[in-house]
Length: 131
Image (cartoon, rainbow, N blue to C red; front, side, top):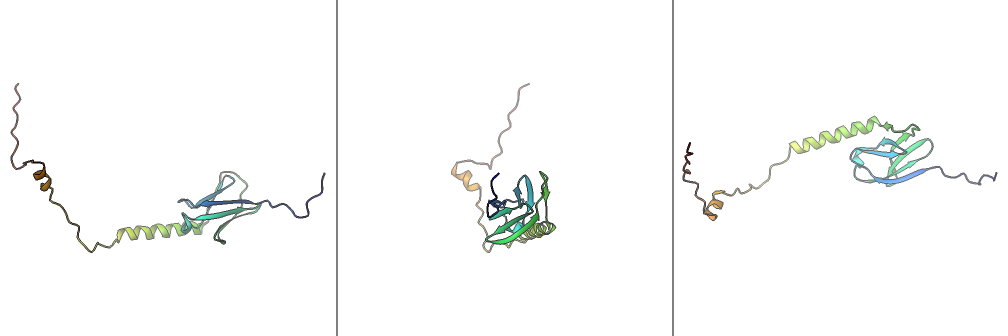
């Protein structure tokens, strides 16, 4: 066997992804939650043998203990609470939308009847069906 190198090799997983709407990143078949306020931004995912870190512009935004089982979903309760607050704020913004300052003009649809020469003022004659 050969000698070990003077510096141990780095056993680290690195990836850069855009955080999806479900605010989870995948590392080795497991999904880890991230602060949902970073949805749509590029985040860096780093995992070693013990920990998973998610950073944005060098700032750590999520840490999880790495799970060695497969197909798990690991969720931080703080991330779920933040998502609930963001959903509530979004709904209240939609409900309390300010009214526009100017009224929108509504066109009289009878103008189209005049353009195409349609006269709807008369009742159409009923056709009698021979029996």
